[in-house]
Length: 342
Image (cartoon, rainbow, N blue to C red):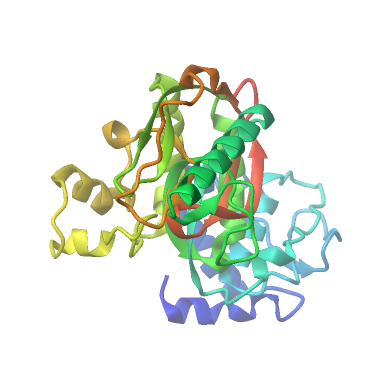
């Protein structure tokens, strides 16, 4: 998306009708994006009328004439217009008025062109979440006894902000502008409808290269299939962007240029998808704290057997990320159906 194209559509919600030129640009963009993104392809697929339903700007919650799709007045830029239109198409049926999409205030909190780092992540069921938070506090206490500062404690407010670090399992990280959140939220709903719940069973404890204690899950086809579906849906939406740094400050951009040495398969994944933990490199886990001294490793020999940390993961979320791989702002959450849509 060029800056000129974005500016051309900034006024999409400034009037109470969308001009034919603006509508044509939005529809063309959706059609082009649909070539690569299943979430968008499902919304602009062959089941819709040959002529795309026209867009009408209206107040949140109001309906528009039959055969049109409502865009909320709060859809202040291109991505909000796309997200709102996608939502309207998703539920569109000829002759049935479609209510306008109410865009959440927190999605608009900041510069809409600001690039954010997102994590498509599984949240933990209550029992697993409680166990993870308890271990995180145990790790933090152990660090403090050794005069080491924990960078974060799960379930507690992070030192650098006002939000709490949420236990999670990362599936795909990418960068996108804040204004794109409505489209990402609807992509999350789409992929969740296509996925099956994932049985998660703890396999072993360990430390990552930065000394952070983690619990790793046993590999299974369900994990691989889940990540494949998520990457297929969200990779096109990153639009070729690569995060500058990884969760612990890893210089990803420098790895791509060769300025910092990295494993060839890692570089290949970064170049192809913008993420470096896919396929054989994917080890589903929960990071439960991090020491301010990466050479410090908390003892792991007095923990419960890892297989007791188990459950079925059904809650998929779009998170805004912070340092050390923390998931902070939950922009959207959706539940995976027991029986995925075929």
